[in-house]
Length: 195
Image (cartoon, rainbow, N blue to C red; front, side, top):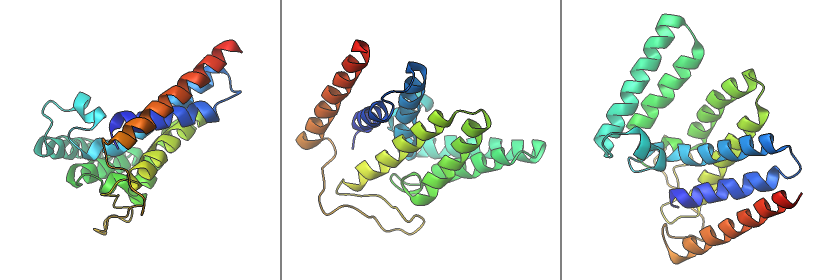
């Protein structure tokens, strides 16, 4: 699926789940769901977040960037002894060496990312931020499961898993899904404005 469809899925789901919550909690849930829906594509140089983070959008530079980030986090871990930096370092290295729909599209990648976000959000008493991130990330994996290429759910095993029913990335069907999600989200937002 394309980045915009992943974002649309995250927004629609977060808006649905946040019905009845205070507006600031809804906003946190929606924003973190959007971030969670984009994180798995850090393993692709042209992913939405990488278009903002990387100076050059190719696999070599992506691998260099995340490996360097991994070294920095590992250095901070050895310097400060904070385990959070160790986890960030390992995850950064794995993103750097992973192919698209590899580590970040697996159970291992999901659990590692959830652990990092969980440490930060729960420490600062932001349960909606954690929930939003988990929702966005999990729905990204589910959506890519429905593409012909599928995902490497059991990484490091080199086995792609996909649904028997697939939707080609960028196809007319995906565009229809995106439009329907957009209409649904707008209807929810209009409903919020009436309350």
